[in-house]
Amino acid sequence: MLEILAMELDSAVTDIGVLAKKAYQGKEYQVWELDKKEFEKLCRIPDEEWKDNWGMWRSAKGSNMRVPEDEYMINNHLILAWDGSARTEVEDDEYYLDRSYANLLEYFSNELGASQPRNVCALAIDLARANGITMAELFSRCQE
Picture 1 (tube, rainbow, N blue to C red):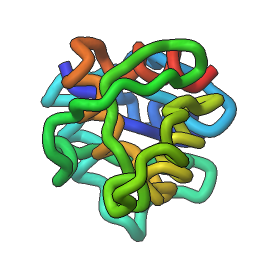
Picture 2: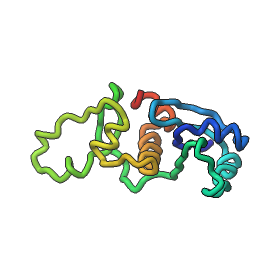
Picture 3: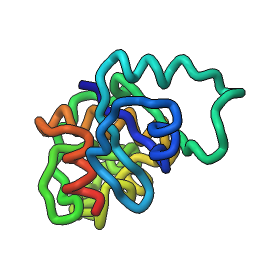
């Protein structure tokens, strides 16, 4: 089973006839589960045929980050995550002792400088994998 990160993909799933399950629905993003055959059906649609009301989706195999080794409290859930470059460049770690964020997107943006959907997707896939959960579970726990 594959997971994709999406925004307002419901109409596309219905109109295209993709067999997919919405595993997470948040304010900003959705996470959909689908098998490889259904994923390929989405991939075959040319950009010029994609309708405005179909939203958007992104997929990734992972990010270019190393295995996360640091513990963060994100939305009151302790998970393994990465220190951002600003944190790792400072010798005196005293200022950076707090490793807590209100939600996952705040962590991605403020700690890692990632806010574009393609980057959020790649990071979320790796973070979920490192914590032994699905991307939908990661968003359910750490975003909302």
